[in-house]
Image (cartoon, rainbow, N blue to C red):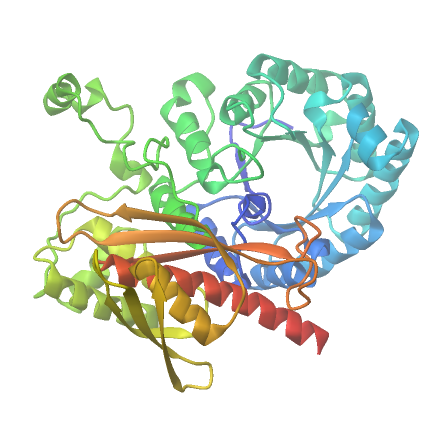
Length: 528
């Protein structure tokens, strides 16, 4: 089944969320899913419903809230998994169940402890069960890149006979090279019984840095669905990056002869949203969406760009949604101009979100003569892309110096609406602030990462702080078992922005703590 259009299957909410520290709550998943719909992806893999009640509920809510793309749930070749996936996606406008089982000898022997015949039987039975519930069924032979091709043809043929409509070939551990993957997909296309009834898909990991190259090799060999994530998120070194695949197919259309249904100008806003929700910053030299992707410092390059942009740019920055400022915003700018600029930057805010962000903008404009697009992006990230607040930071006051004891006083708004205040000493101002917050909230955790970036140049630049905290342990019953690790240990990220780096640090810590508190609250409700 081959056309000249590539189906974009986004698994940011499932495989991408498996990046260490990238845990998303349900409201964040819904916001990202809505942005993916604006981006024009064809399929959203919203989660692994059987992994936890929380993930099932998140997939169900995405299925009910998002129109346009197919909403997909992942399941092992286990009846209860498939039933959970169907429960989660059944209310979607368009739905899919994605079933997988390992087919490489190393996985079958050491992980599944199953014979080839047992894997064939499980494939027949479970794909048929999934098809009895849902017309759109995808089947994946896990670790397909290291599987015996002859056995792979056999398994895939059984999946087609049982009702699978998409066959996804994963390079689960990022082992194969582009030439090898091309031959694998070509062999599947030529030797799998009934292959004309199904779409071939590819799902490549980036352990050797070849996920995008392998995916494109698979496309050249006849695959017509590509599985990918925003910013290349995923386990270990991640997955094929959606934005890189999209622009490779678009920029080199004369070579590939293929199209997608993506709204390319939504690539950059999608990248920013996912980065801010997950707390995983995008490296400056990241292709397509990195800060330096369209920057030129070398004199020869600058000279060429001034004469003709095509000398050193093969893509237009605005095509992928990277903003080119046309309005100068300052303290005299009105709400209408502010709202228009946010729309041009790709941010679709609700009325109350716009009100809060505009208030922050006015405060910032009083401190800076000109507010840049990067400043606006930082404001939106800090005001909108934040978890539901259990505790709200109201005020901090810090005293510090090279011969002074760093002291911080912190005031928070508690869940019952009351104001609570405490103070603490620390080795520095940020340490003092964090200790004061800990005294007020009293939730054990360990700060594992702390990073600061200046959004723009100059002494009045907005600073962005990203942190990670680790909480829980097998003895902590206040947190559920982490489906990724099987333990009660979680990593939560936090993000904050302000012209005052101490305030930004406090906001980032509160962001991470509120995620932790929300997870504990969900556990308490489930146990009640």
